[in-house]
Structures are given as C-alpha cells and as structure tokens.
Image (cartoon, rainbow, N blue to C red; front, side, top):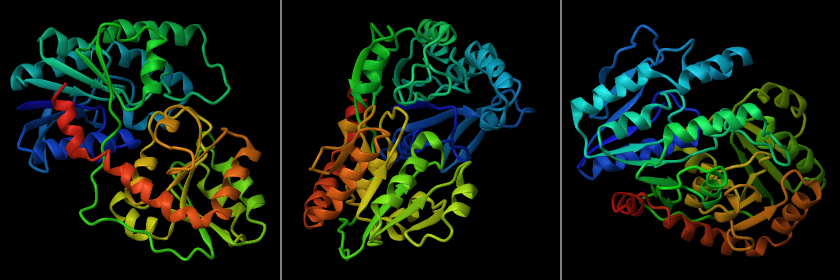
Length: 392
C-alpha cells in the first residue's frame, strides 16, 4: 500500500515522545513492505517550496512553512512572537498548497497524520480536498491549548483558548478516523465538540520490543529509582527531589535522573553534595536499556501537568520496570495499582511518600511487578499496532 505519513517534526528534529512514535511507525511500515513517504518541515527559511531527501531509503518531502520563525525554535521565542506565529500557523495557506501538491504528485491510498502544529492546521483540508483516506492520531491537547500544556488544578480556559479551540475544530472537521493513545484524551476533545462524525479508536502507542526477553537481576539492598524526562517544573522534578530528600533519610535508596532542560544546571549545583542523587544527562534511546534500566527498580513520573500517554511508561515496561506515577490524564490507563506499579495524587507530598515507602517496604513483591510490567509491554508490540491501524 502507498502510505503518506505527516508530522511536523522528523529526525533530526524532535521535541518528545510523539516523534519517537511517528518514527517507529514509519520504520515498521517500511519493514512490512509498504511504499511510504513522509511530509515534514524544514528549518531553513530559504527552502519554502518542497524538496526531497532520502533517509533510511525513505522519501522525505520537506518545506519551510512561511512564518516569522521556524517551529523548531519556538521554545526560544518571546510570548508576543509565539502569539503571532500561532495565528499564521493555524491559517498557513502556503503549507496547504505545498501539502496538496505533494499528495497530488504521489497519489497515496492512505494518509496517516500526526502532530500538525508547525506544518499548519489547513493540512486536514488539503487531504480532504483530494478524497484520500485519512487516519489522524492525537498526541496532546494542542488543538485546544497551543502550548499543549495544562497544569493540574489550574483553570486555563479563557476567551482566547475558547476561540482558538473553535477554529481548530472547524479546520480539522471530521477525519474519517481519529486514533487516540488514551481514552482520557479522546474524552477531552469530545467534551469540546471535536470529531463528532469521525470513527474514534483508542489505540495505545506502539513500542519496538527487544529481541531477547528482558529480565531484572538486581540487588535489593539498595533500591534504585529513575526520573526520565525534561527537567522542567511542570514535569514535577522539583517536587520529586524535595520529596525524595525526605524519603531517603536512611540513605538506602538512590535516584538517577536522565534528561535535560532549563533547570538542569540549577539542580546539579543545588544537589552536588548529595550522594543519593545522580544526574546522568541525556542518554539516547538505544542505550537506555544497557546503561540505565538494567540497574533501576522503579521509574517515577511525578507530572504536575496532564499527560496523554507518556512514552517513559512504555520504555519502562519494555525493560521490565514498574512505574510510580501521578494519577493524571491517561496515566491510570497504563499503570495498574499494585500490579505493574503505584499511583499517587499529583503534587501531593504525602501521597508520593506513601507509595515510595510502599515500594521500598514491599521490595519482596518487586519481581512480581517487574514481570507484570514486561507482560504489559507485549500488548504494545508495534507489529500488533500496525495490524490494528491498517485494519481501521
């Protein structure tokens, strides 16, 4: 089958788990013998018309959507510039024409669209105008809140977000099929009137499983915990370090921190004399198993923002590692209390302390949780995912 895959970012550019999921789907479809090509953005402003590059024997169409700066650099821009950028991105007719021309040239049987922030929200109209079957996969709340970020117990609704949401709803209309990794995210859009006539499917994100079965062989005298993600306040890293310093008074536990972010240098300096925490910086995905997860008992996800379906949970289960996580967004759909991890109330110090103590005091139960995590990972095998996706 000839399949077009559209995502605003594709390697070497990425922002988070959505790009990893997208890349894995591309790779598996190619491996299965499908004729696939990609539409994505270029960060080079002189290349406004589409051009073709080859990556991993896959045709990649890139172009620079006309705007005041590249989507790749959005986090570096002041609010007023981002505000203008979002308006231009939402109604980017230049992107519409580029996408439509590529689709007319290639004539795919199916378009799999993912994150379109940065490539333009007129893209669904370009697909619809050519009567091509479209399966759109949701990854976040960006069709309602441009930042994609909603903090726990905060009301972010205002007249701007309401107008923006209604515009996005009108532009996206009703793709034939909408896939969401979590029921929570699908319900979130339902409550705001999105996708009323689309076929809707909850399909957790796929992972590429290791060829060899993964087993833990750990010394339970010292319990090792992991934070894997962005070192940003909304990800709960400040909250976690504050709680963990109190939890680990007996110095019989250790917290490894993998990731980078705006708080990295500040935190390294603050905790440089504490031997219970170790900052490992950025570690590529292909090295996580051998260099990190092989020594970890539990992964901690202390998010203070609503998460859809965090890739760190999938990675943890892949390496037989149970999870201790905030009960927020789509996380409770992946983490089962006492089965493959523990859940706590977001931002609640005593709730997290309770689950940390439970994980340490019940370490004899660790192998059971670890095995269940590995079994859960098998449900997310990308081969099963692709079969279900193409059957829609």
